[in-house]
Length: 367
Image 1 (cartoon, rainbow, N blue to C red):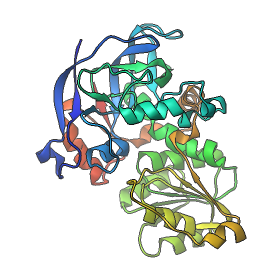
Image 2 (image 1 turned 120 degrees about the horizontal axis):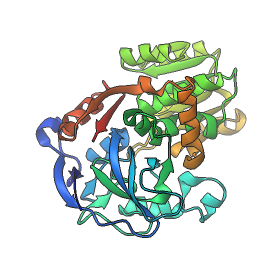
Image 3 (image 1 turned 30 degrees about the vertical axis):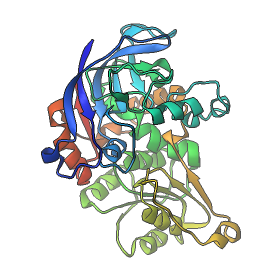
Image 4 (image 1 turned 135 degrees about the vertical axis):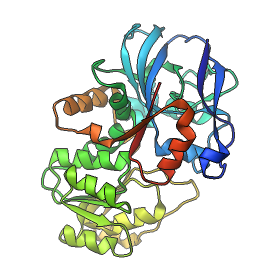
């Protein structure tokens, strides 16, 4: 079949994207699903910094590529057990094979075949169903239809509005998961979140959910700090030269847990400096591969500090996505507050200008 989608053929084109037009809306031939795969009618897809990182070249990928990884839709054709036409599904951006070492340990985010296929721009099988175009993180959700591995899909409640359902596949799973899975924050422990995009605010929601206190939000955008307060932050700190001191003052000497969601080595150093003795710094953002960070080596031993990475929120998507949706539906995880705007396929370049400017939280493409 022929699908209409947003194809990136060259990374690193200059901003504004409204002029350089890195995403071209093209018709691409999509082959039918193979064994273990699904054909899905995409309903909505979130615009994420991980997409922007491919567009600007800071997250190099094979080209050309049909972008979009945070999405939801309806199964049209199933070649996999457990799924049927009409099922509503959300996607995880790492397909978990279920058989490799990390999968056997319950660490789906580190699936080895899943990582290899994502790097190669293929589906989990190693094949491509897009003619002459690579898949993005096993999803390629910026199109009206997609073929995905069933290992990338999770059945979800069809009553959920698609513009909300899409958010659970990346922003919510990554941010909330960093708090409840990676860090395992407990009620009464202090936390700080550096960066208030979709993932950062999801982490803040997760921290509020588990009862973190005090809960500090850090960003450069005043409106995001206001929203963070409305979502449960006890303190809002404008990012700047005094950030670390202000965070340490708000948390009586440093936070038990600091979450870095910006994807910056420099911000990661700030997050580390803002944790207390014995504290844990969790980094969630994806920096350019050339970036490094440095910390006083002695502090890791003498102060028993910990630095942890969190990918996909250390999630088991088939377990966590339905759980987070249930919490949203119960009013305990107000994910809808992350939605800034909905956009159309023909306006994606302009929408990524908005994302790059840092003035939006989550824009969602409706298809």
